[in-house]
Image 1: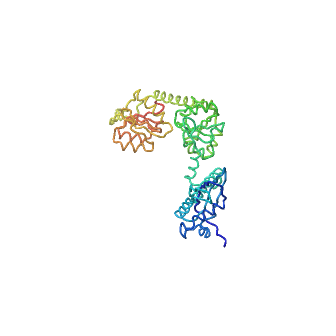
Image 2 (image 1 turned 90 degrees about the horizontal axis):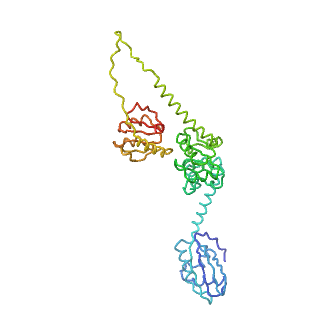
Image 3 (image 1 turned 90 degrees about the vertical axis):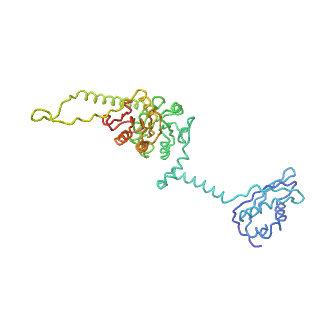
Length: 423
């Protein structure tokens, strides 16, 4: 007989066998070939299929205990799905092997290609992760989509508040506390795995508990919102160090070099409290100085005189627009809303009952005001009051604009402009 060509398996038939007696492996193989002979026709004859290499070597493993034989049968196949299923079903017609009753059950038909694909995908994930961790020069050329998927796999939720955090929170003795999930993702991208996000302006219980057990560094944005969150954090948690992103930047957008520079330049919590106190005092001092200077300036007439000694005739100036005064209740409502919006870059649109009509990003604020034909009483948002926004608010008859700060003077518009300092 010529040498049988090796089979290229696509499927593997798995079956179990139970025999009421003691038999050997050759008896089982002989029964398989003998009792299926002529059953499936000449094209599916097992001996011919094996000789042509379409059926591989039939493996039989049996074990005898207490007078009974049990084992397994494995048949590799390069036939198609239907033919392989027929061969598997033919095994179950075998009811006797030698003098003993037998029962064969096909448990499954395995698709070898699916197993290989699963193995390829699993190994590819391991290789990609190794490539990202080694920070090879070529890793910068990977697409943002692939890098993002790797980072998301590493982020986790921590504590009873389910805060976004890196995988190194429990192992590390030092922890960076940031504002949001995007900040944690940016730190993970650059290899920093011991960060946790507050997920808002209020300090969660999980962060308070961690501050009692570990060394905490508060890492906030380099804007006014970062200062407000820092004040809240310093007042309720046991913070050891404080650091900030560069002025005008957020932690989620800074580079690896800026992150390491900020962490190296961190200051103690006590020093940060002193600096925050000085900023408040300085702001109050400048405000008082401006107010005193405006009160002390004498009101002199600069109108030129005519030869007769009389001032020239001028048209009376139109009355300046008067802004609506804010009530105590409105001021409290605006203050609470503004505090909740810190760091969100969002805006609340209110009606005259101070009910929230909707919340929109500040980038879409002007478009939203124009699309709402009236009915907007006030707008509270996490941003600076710009001149274009004031003009749009005047056209839509908005009474109040409440923001972090203002680039427009209150006397230049009929809309009441309120900032953090006014509240």
